[in-house]
Amino acid sequence: MKESKFNFSVTIRVILKHIWIVIVLAVVGAGTTFVLRPKGSISHSASAQVMVLAQKPYDVSNGTLQDLVKTYDVLGIAVKAYNKNIEKKAEKASYTSLFDSLQVTVNGNSQVVTIEANEKTAKDVKKLVSLIAKQTVKVSDKQLPTWNSSVVTPAHLTGKSTGGLSGKKALLIGVTVGLVVGIEGAVLIDYAQGRSTKKRTEK
Image 1 (tube, rainbow, N blue to C red):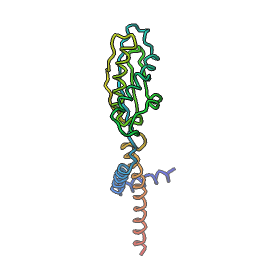
Image 2: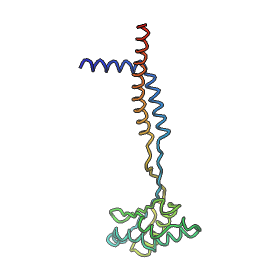
Image 3: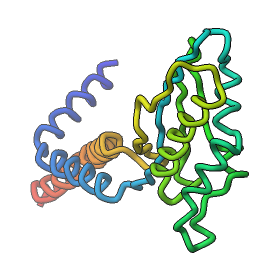
Image 4: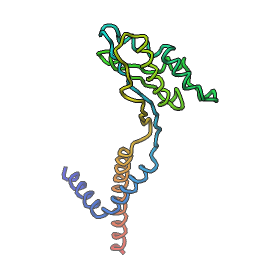
């Protein structure tokens, strides 16, 4: 037990003696990890909200609104309008793929519809979602018993980072590795200096 305590105190003394080596390696480790960390990628999606005010609460159910947004009268016409001035086939939106991937959620009182699509569905996904929201308003006013419908939250983009390593995590990992290497380096240097001094004394 005493030997373990002695070794610990010696290690602390060695670290303090060569503290600058430990600090420098910790800083270098943090900087290197931060610069070389995998950045990952940012995926974008667009969303908009439409309010539908039904004449009678039971006239419009959640399922009714969700189905309405994905009908050809809404989604199909919006896709057609989006593709109107696009010449390249690869850049055109697809009604079929959007029908499967478009996220449509309705709040509890069946009034606010949230429409969301990711960037894989269209090059200008914000424009596409905006067209879908506006078409939802037009069709709901015509086909559903509503007092009024309107876009309450215009289409906007949001970005989400996927993969990679955050700056904070990179710094933490770099500092930790740098400290471990620095402490080991300090111990080895002190050991080498001690052996050199011993040899000179013996001569």
